[in-house]
Image (cartoon, rainbow, N blue to C red):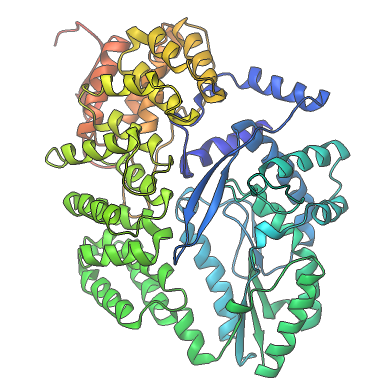
Length: 619
């Protein structure tokens, strides 16, 4: 499980609905934490916890429910599914794709892990899949391309049949029992009604995707056998693309797909099933746009002046708007957004962003990142204000994404009052928008990130109002107060403990032990550097700095030395105004003064770094 955790700790920084410090206590207390979990697994006392659930946007008013399991359940679930996949992948079809971690080259050669850059951008994976699919389109053997998917796939997977399929992959009986408990607790909720043993949770760590992918292997084999060749079939999770020679064959294949899926109690999505002729293929997959974007991105990677491609980006954007929302338009729109951001183009207007937010709310994070990359902060605030009053604000994850994106940038002083006002409104519980809780943690984090020290009374009041906050938000507010005013740590933790929550009790335990100077073995790296999707620079976000500030409470000499070393590495990046305020607090906590020094040879950028010197040193 340790190897699984080392993978998860990096992935935690890339998920939605993140913890305020990405569960730093597990890094610090790993041996002790794992030993407790292992004993419970072995003696049979382990029981999964009831998960959190959030609504994530889809198009046309629809949404998917994202399940957020307790962190120990994430680890157990992932460990079991990774074990199964290592055996099952030997019988995996060449043209089947399913997740971010396990992905294959266009012709099917497996690679175990993506590069950091590829993981950071989901489109790197989509493009690999798309290239594989284009080989199918260009082969000349097929007159039509059949596209289809499965209706409510994750919600329809029957547990009994899934476990029957997994038995072929040598999953131990005890692990199968634990997996049964997990999927029973985490499966889609059904209110107060009795729920049948059906459905996998939609979560963000690929565990359910792995099981769902393996569940379709039998279906894949039947399809390939019917077609007579693997080359005519490609699948991305439940989206299937099949090459056929005529509309007659297309109808035959549709019939076979319907029967094959029905044998596993699944249903073909008739509304999304289409047989595309060559002209329709080019339009649906936006082949011309994708080819041009590939060439422009190649020129960027080759070091060509980005400004020379601004006209190309504007031309592609205008043609996309002319052709309308057909096929994979939203994926292409996001590629153009990335190109415009990287080339310094403002061709995407505020009205364009409003259109994207209304018609493709599931792409909201990328729209927000584009505006921030262009430093269009006034448009950024105006877009959110419009969204809140436009009757398009149906999704709590869009609200959360707006706050999350700001945790990686330093807003200019002229817009900070507006941003603080919105953060305060949402952390208290906004009467506007969805009135749901997903945005409260990032809103609280934003008050920490750009606050001026005058938010203490507001944050304290949140802890004193019984029943007002859920566990993750209560944990976040308490952690922020402890970082800003560590001399009152006992007070903040006592206030947080008024409402019981596993999130809060874990925070109390590890912060108390940190304050007492207990010796820990800090993880490496202690924090992760990030490269936002549309930016060509690396940044540390607010959660990385909050981790450092909380650990700086410790009087333990060895830990403080590690923190100083980590801070010096963070200072090799250009120091932003929001970070400068945190640095001053760190100086007081660690008893050092970070002074400018020349950047070392071979480091990115030209901004000076900092060296740590004891406070009181004269120069």
